[in-house]
Image (cartoon, rainbow, N blue to C red; front, side, top):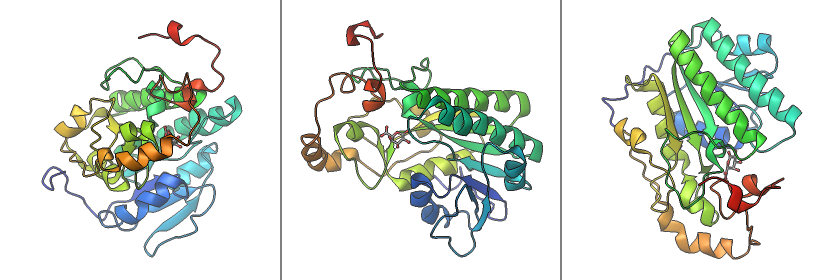
Length: 280
Ligand code: 15L
């Protein structure tokens, strides 16, 4: 990402929800260089609070607590919520009600930009043999995936109706390296994810965008050209780890349903259909 496309004003208040979770923990140390003084929020305090970071405890289901978190904020990176498949109650509360509370309290507080952690599971029922862009119809593979599609729709509403610049990142799998064959296609390094956060927080052209949260993976199932257009230049290459990912894959049991679809085990869980009857 070029610096002239992304000039950061370090004095502004930026909130990171879900700060104590896996993705928050991996990206906070990297974000610090660009945005010192992050305001962190979660239901529990991060164990490794760093100098300059402020923690505000909040439950996404409680609008007054979220209002306190976003008060005076210029931007929000919303990672908070339930991060895998869960019961309907869990998903409803954390990801549907919680996501609504976040957007609505942010609007009331005058927040200018929101980066929403969507997920590959919003489109997890696309077969692996298909390459998809960000303009396809959503095909969630789980209740969790449905909640991410909801968050994307909510983002579009708040962008069009209220002028908040919203970037939805359909994040693949974040970590130091791809951990199996599926992740060779969807892996993203923490550095590359921070690059995408910065595009969402800075790029002047963002109104409402959906981007894939993936590194530069030769085996990718996604056309991420919009991200590249916005200056994204990922440095991670899944292919560099192919041998390790293949070695890990052989330790896993075959999943005749999950291995067909992009969402993997999220697609095969609770599956009662025939693979042949799923769409192309
Ligand atoms: C996700 O959306 C989850 O948050 C993460 O835990 C992984 O399961 C990832 O997707 C994945 O698809 O590997």
